[in-house]
Length: 501
Image 1 (cartoon, rainbow, N blue to C red):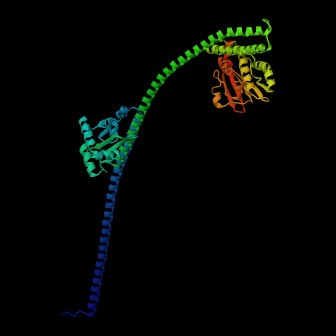
Image 2: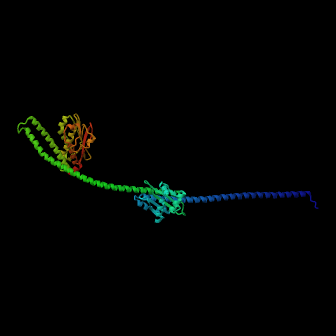
């Protein structure tokens, strides 16, 4: 047996232990690296899983965005088509033309294969006015069977819209059975008179389903159709009423023309009668007045004072009758156009001055103040001075009659835009509004205390108005009780200057 030294064994053991330590150290290091690698792999697996989930989410989001974009594009296309349709039907006021414009191309732009517009007639029967994707036989079948469904029809007439996405199962089954489509919208056409029909649109079962946007779109279209039909019916009623009114106006115009012709004929007959009677009265009145004057002179013998007094009254009343006859003759001649106005250049200020000189005694007797305001710009004009003087005499005489002592009469003349305007204003008793409306009628006299004591014919103002109108002017009056009255008239002068030239 080999004897090995102890130190060698100790050294060998020491080396062996060092070797085992090195091996153990190396083994432990490799194991840590292996664990780290495993952890890294796990982290990578988790990262790849997260990336896969994110990719799936991105793809899903992209699909949803594409789907939303398609729905939005469809919505915009439908709104654009609806705008075109609304513009087309709203510009027509004829019912048949409205339905004609709802053609297939427009309905196709709305995105539906099938379309029906059913409208009730006067007998409360449904008639097809627009049909796309349905045959004539289909439309008859649909109209007949839809009217049989009382509950469904009543619900729609109340303003309810039914579609394949919001209808109760029982209602949906009825609509699918009648119209033979899976995807649909059925909505009422409402007007101011209530429900007059229905709009239906639909697609096959393999087409895209109806959306809430489609339902809203068709409801808007139905409302637009209702408004257009309302406008068409209103226009038709207005047009028919206008024709009836025109016919009535035409008939009434003929009646009025006949009545006017009759009135003119009566007026002409009246004027001719007055003229004839006046002429017949003139001769005996002239004789009466002449004999009375002869008797008053005493040429046929001495006349007692009492008789002279009676003869004087006969003479005065004869003068009044002559004046009445002359006024009647003048009015009838002016109305019949037989009086020719003798137009000549005249100064209206001079006419007013002549009237003042003529009526000064009457004004002085009643202590009435006189004022004449003549516009210095008033030119000479063409008129019949004697007739216009009669107008002023009548107006001033009338003012003198109804103005109490101490009152005032103002005559004003101005020139404005080729028109002479004249006014005669007094501070007399005035008159009521209802009297002014009749004031220029022949023989009309205002019922007041003065007229009850002072006699008159009621022809002076009527004659004055006729004379002014013969000069193509106008006359009017304003008055206030216990304040005074103003008579005014205008005389256009331009045409007369042109005639003179």
